[in-house]
Image (cartoon, rainbow, N blue to C red):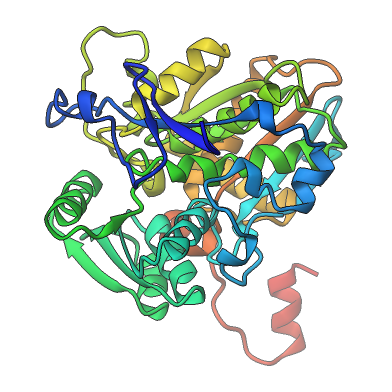
Amino acid sequence: MGKFIYKCVDCGKEYDSSKIRYLCDSCAKENIPGKPPKGVLKIVYNYNSLNYSFDKLKKEHFVDLSPVNNPDSFPNLRIGQTPLYRIPSFEEKELPFELYLKDDSQNPTFSFKDRASAIVSAFAKEHRINTIITASTGNAGSSLAGICAANNQKAIVMVPENAPVAKLTQIIMYGAVIVPVQGNYDSAFDLSIMATEKFGIYNRNTAFNPLTIEGKKSVSFELFGQLNSNIPDTVFVPVGDGVIISGVFKGFEDLIMLGLIDKIPKIVAVQASGSDNLTRNLKTNEFQIKESKTVADSIAVDIPRNFFMAKHFLEIYNGETITVTDDEIISASVQLSKNTGIFTEPAAATAFAGFLKYRKEDKIIGKSKNIVLLTGSGLKDINAVKSTIKIPEAIKPDINDLMKLLKI
């Protein structure tokens, strides 16, 4: 078998790992433009050869559970290993359950996407590939740009023309080639695939390059380690195209395959109601697209490219779904900032809004351990919360004016 194989999540066809692969050859031929693609490949390891303890795998940076062979292939940045904060109280009230916030805004480019970019970059380095292309609404692009800058590689990033300026600034500052594309994320995605097919440029796109799932699953390993080799009861995950949640499932699935855990936590897919094309179609026979319109631009997706893998995981492991409005997302962002000191972008606040909604509906169980994945920094899109901010007018340098402002 070798270290791993690729397996199609739709038809089950297996491929060896002797060459770079993206989608299943058979299923890709049947894909229909404007619909989620079938044929996304899942990486399956030779688990029988991994009679390792979790501590040994952790010490060796989990390379035996990754497509990368040498830890030195990764860029010299701290990727992952992000803090897990226990929040004992909220809104000045002690919580009857355990709440933890996994703060991935502390990755090098301030988002969860660095986990995937690092794996893709390291794999490219081992295969002597120097240029990587991706499509992005901002986070994946700035992530690839930053990781490539640290690993002496070239990044080409295709973005929709309305991507937030803060994210575009990051991409340019990291020295990547930025290509604004008329239309939305799906337009940029399709063009990047065309570039890969025509020019052979290595492609990082999530739900196209199977390695991205392997990068994102590392958060599950970290949660297991940070909870002292225990698993949480519930994990709230923001969902757009379904790649992050698939990675979370895959990480816990790997731990099951190794015999380190015997069940997977309840994983909740949280989508913005204005961009619910994944969760809304889980029970339908014919996929229906609704144009995405949400303040959470990072998870605004018309065609969820990883729909079928996410659906597969949600069904076999009894995952749950919930949607939240833009008002709930912005409110969650404000509450989170004021009560914890963590300022997240709307996509990350979506997961917290889902947690708050679960709590309001009395779905949080007793002494349970609950994790909220916070996937990006609020500084990436400050326009989203502009309506909640009021900056006072400047006062004279006079103590009486200060007393009036402070209401003393």
